[in-house]
Image (cartoon, rainbow, N blue to C red):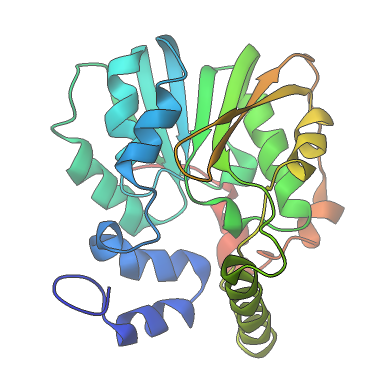
Length: 261
């Protein structure tokens, strides 16, 4: 970043002063040149834990790194969902030559209100968990639970909370503090926080939405959290919870509709 073909400091500043959606529209063409993108080796290590499935969903698919590697593991279809039009456009371009011949579908939709019920055997989410805080975490997990068939699995990369004396702890809290100040002063918000969906705290979140949980080690300090949908029950959150979402602005509310792009 900040040099060569990657985004400049001023481009990143413009992104963070935009809404979350608009910010990623702006960053999309250069997103894969930033440190925000989940490394390929980590995606490959995570997906190596699974065999073939009929249908897989990449939630917050970004530029399609996960889709490229899911295609050869799916027999019927791979679906990528993102709320950024720019990210979907990049994903279409970058997955056009992905190995395999399984159909790929890219959909612009809100991950907290996915337009699927009992469709997928596997859902993955790489690198976007920091965009969901407070009640949006429940909305996200409930939405993914609805999209999965009974026995389907939801997998994502996480970690444990860093030691209080570590640089990672203070850098993350410093970033989160700066983001809270930004969102208190500037509207619409740009929602991005570190140290979310951590182990073991995230296990209770998954459990209350009908998942059993296992955690596997990945290279480095990363952990793969795998939730298997056991209870065939749907949790519905009505408008009171929606209104308390940090994304409750007119442009984001409109994203409850779905666009196949």
